[in-house]
Amino acid sequence: MEQRKVVIIGSGPAGYTAAIYSARAELQPLVLAGLQFGGQLMLTTDVENYPGFPEGVTGPEMMEMFQHQAERFGTEVVNEDVTELDVSERPFTVKTADRAVRADAVIVSTGASAKWLGIESETRLQNQGVSACATCDGALYRGKPMVVIGGGDTAMEEALFLTRFATKVTVVHRRDELRASRIMAERAQAHDKIEFAWNSVVEEILGDEFATGVRLKDVHTQVEREVPAEAVFLAIGHQPNTAFLGGALELDDVGYVKVEAGTTRTSVEGVFACGDVMDPIYRQAVTAAGSGCMAAIDAERWLAEQAA
Image (cartoon, rainbow, N blue to C red; front, side):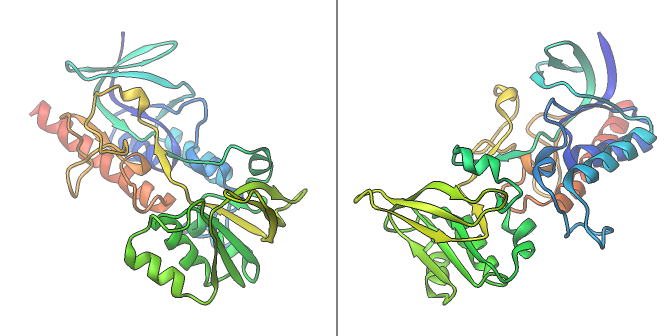
């Protein structure tokens, strides 16, 4: 069975940054990038808030640069999905459909996926006015009417953030009261740019090449109406990509990997986690990259301790 000092599960900014640091430390990392490599940035057309790109860059272009930089220092990248992580003994065993690899240390960076409505128009208009990240994309639609779908704290945070750019923000919620904390709900409801579409669900996102609005249906009366919007933001939650772990690591109630405060150390010594798979709060490319750096340094130091 192939043996590696470090195996990194997942790509994206966290995984590739961990690879860059691991490779420069001569740990010869293997990145099992997954079949859908590159993480959430592969679904993002324009990235304007990552330092060092004053003119912006597309998400796929950025991920290609990250991968090339990691490979420059000796990282091997394989586009295979990990199906199992066995931490019952060291070295650990990382399995895909086609291989099993022994790893002295493992870095988990499989990210989290935004939850979507599951309608055709949403898929067709992704990055054409439909997004799951207001912080990432809100400024692209300055001076336009916008819609936020959701009723929790994240939805309220996104709606309030978007008021900096939007002419109006309509929050669509399927109930007649918010799930958000009281303080967040009060802030949103008091803002003069935010309106609420209560007891409503999105039947369709309107537009051919770009979003132009949403068609809503009242869940009680079944009456439909259209709301103009040139940007539609989904804020109905994220699902961390941790199903493959099968109980190998301690997770929180939602499924995010638990790490020791101020580190990337997980519940299993020698296994580290970085990026959106352990971060339910920030979910930004730059914070993911930073935690990838931390994970590589944590892994390098831990391996040095084992060799001492």
